[in-house]
Length: 492
Image (cartoon, rainbow, N blue to C red; front, side, top):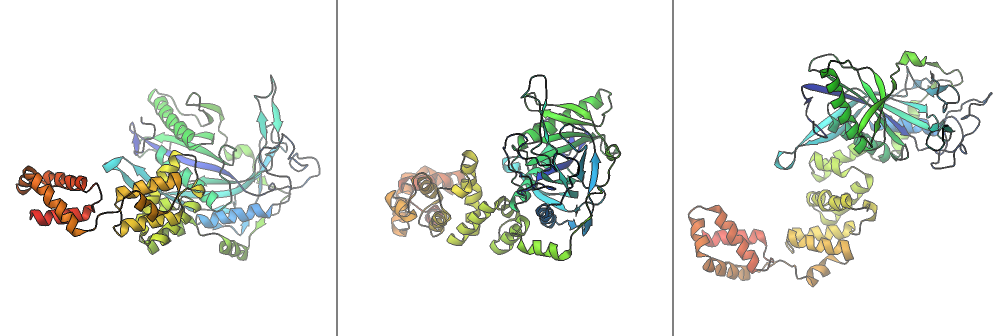
């Protein structure tokens, strides 16, 4: 099996994947207390009496956490419930002081919704882009648990309760994904959405965006197989490796005659393998019941509409506008709205040059290639939108060729400068004197009688050879379109 198999069937089995993602909300304080959520503090310095579950303490709902849940619901087309309920999810771990987690069960705050994205398959001429959508079941508010520390102590474990009570939005999908590539593409799109609207910083290394993948396999047409949940995937690379391994492992188990047991597993990046952590619990094991210390969460329609009015333009709305206003293909529009910074840069370039498709090609091509190769972010590009717009303008008006434009771009990236001055200094201006070009063409035709005869005998390659000779004779300054036009006229 390939490292990232995008086919519907893997060795005759259909892969079924669903996701549960914990997005840490960007509030300054915790979901039910005023303790700080800042990352990196010394252990147990950001846990107050409520987080420690000291007797007599009561939770108080963080309005900012609710508002961020509303934002997410609006961003993915969900129903924001006017009435939702908090529940106690009972289980024991040393880093869960209350012995239960406050979450939502029967009535979550966000219900339904969809995440849409493009999935690329194949390479080169065989590449294809398919629009995919993953349905959301729900997104509910809950508190995080603390953290058990095993490596810092010899023969003992420590407990850090700084994370206890940190606000989370758990986003649950239907089992709609059918390949590793589709699962990773979904996770990347969800990451884009929560960071775009500002409800989560998306820092996977710090645990702000953690994904659990429920993976099962089945023969086509058979009932859903038994799933195993891969917990706490904190990078897209590890996500791909973990799901690929789990698919392969499950298929081998079934083919060896074993049944898959429902379980929670962890991925070890050092070995590239998943290992069972515990048998998977079901809802009944947690003994959910409404939390008596928290009243139902009531969200008025006026609050929802106020949040909607204050939200920035959503990526899917902006992409639709790029298609309508700039005439871009849907794929370009979706790619350019991967981040607000990239979208803003593209719009500035498009307005500067008046050529949105060319602007899109440069941003998706040369700009993205250099960003991917280095450590720069688009906010710190050495080539401004105005400079790139001016450069594209000089391609469009025939002043320079595409190849010359790349030389100018290299100079702008390395040393800065002004586009027209660089074109003059490097002698890159295209030859637009038709008389001079006709003279060069005449000389080339006279010196290449064999190619002329082959072209007239029907060999198209001979024409390309003549074009190359003219470009060489003009030292690359001839306009390729004019060269083709003049050559065809002379030969015809």
